[in-house]
Length: 159
Image (tube, rainbow, N blue to C red; front, side):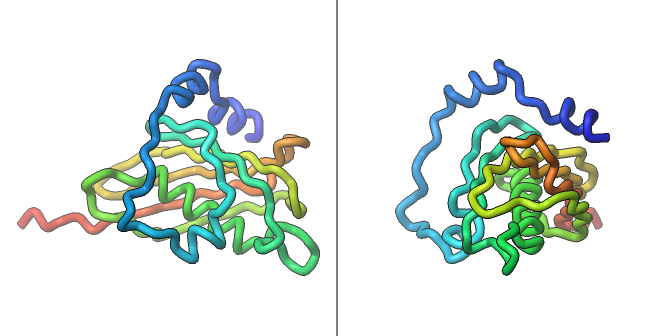
């Protein structure tokens, strides 16, 4: 399965060039950084983005490690939730809420390890979205965790 996941999430040169041409506007002044932004997601860098997939880099900070110096499993779950939620986001649509996450913790990441995080939208139907998020150690290629994330929005009644 590792081979299939790797091939499925591979970013091509064409993808990288498309991302390099993006213009990303600054956050509007009325929005300020939240505790969540500064604590859990700070340092996450988007390397590639296109409809239905994202590639990010993340260096494991001390604030997200456990007493053994490993990236905490809660921090991994948080990253799966945040990246999976970003994959299911639709502009001008009701916000989707997490209804299920299944995470396989396959290895550990240590303080200052650089991780590659890849997210993919697996599918959508009737307000339901399924995503896949894979965290991998950039230097060793070892998969740290693989998470499947289900999100749902409440649709308005057709009655």
